[in-house]
Length: 370
Ligand SMILES: Cc1ncc(COP(=O)(O)O)c(C=O)c1O
Image (cartoon, rainbow, N blue to C red):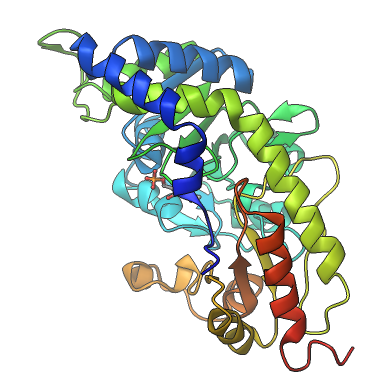
């Protein structure tokens, strides 16, 4: 079986260091918000190029705490993409605001700035672009719209740690940004973890309070907060990953380029070219096929894992029925939800395995015809 991602191999590659650092944490007797979290926050802020990085419980909480810290809530609208993991919109609903879905661009799968502009109303407070599958969204256009219309931009960078847009790391472009360290993310831990980055001192202060029951002084609470903190063990593991992330991302991009070269003229497949001026870190390698279900079945028969991202755009989810969207409202997302799928890719995919995936795709009936 060729897996979609290779978490055990990733762990194997750094096992001794991970076990030693975890042992240090256990010996230290400090398990929550200790020196590893502080050091990871400092190192991550430096890597991304921002003043503040704040570790929290997971990527969803990172979005919720950021929205809450900005005072976004009932009566407010936040524009985001319908083609993302549910949490991007769920966080908006969780603070009582309303998600407004703007369709994506077919070439990048990222939110379309023109559609964002059209979706703005007097209630709009913020835009959450998602750097989907590891490719930065069109941040110049989004920032220009936000500035002109007086809106906040919160980057959902959960799938794109280390990706670069026009010389700047994602997470340093919007007013704030959110990351997830879920195990399968390109920077992941062995459990849940999240991070918020910002250059805004006040926002950082508020988020530090919110993540810890609205408190900065033990047993004195200035606001209603959350319990959402990064654990010492996860911060220790993440510091090890952080030292490797650029090499891992480069290997992802190298393998992605191999797929692009070798599958370029496959008659059943369409591979979107990466957009210029930005690095795509390929959290997932996704491609399109008008015969997706048959192609996926053939891959699975050949022992190759593949998966659909995402089978139902968010505007059509049961949970958002009350918002009144219907099929046809976001046609690009709807079409991609029927044609897009991911094939194996991680820094630990071996070339012989990748060759087997490529061969299996060419061996599908109709594959050789063109
Ligand atoms: C785009 C996006 N946003 C938000 C999240 C939420 O992150 P977490 O699972 O850490 O809560 C994820 C990942 O799960 C994601 O892919």
